Length: 97
Image 1: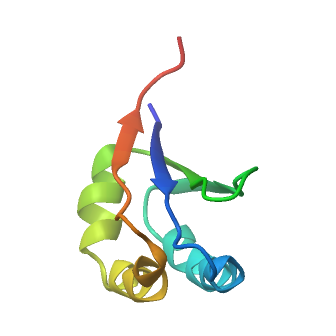
Image 2 (image 1 turned 30 degrees about the vertical axis):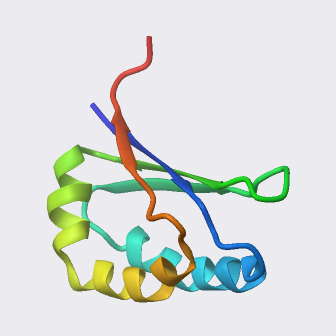
């Protein structure tokens, strides 16, 4: 059963276009990860609202123990984490009801 990773990405006001460029650069890093299925990033509809990240993985472990422990994640962090305030919290969701 695949799992859905959910995170609200609160990007500091001002550098949204730079964040979006960094996300485009970072995207291949996550896409190359074992167990990765898909990634969706949604722009906020209003000022000051977070971006929505939805990533589908074959398992929580593929994200948490695979991607998050990899060199690709260190590159992802370097590209994206400077934009966040505060750091995003990640949640996982299982099967559809």
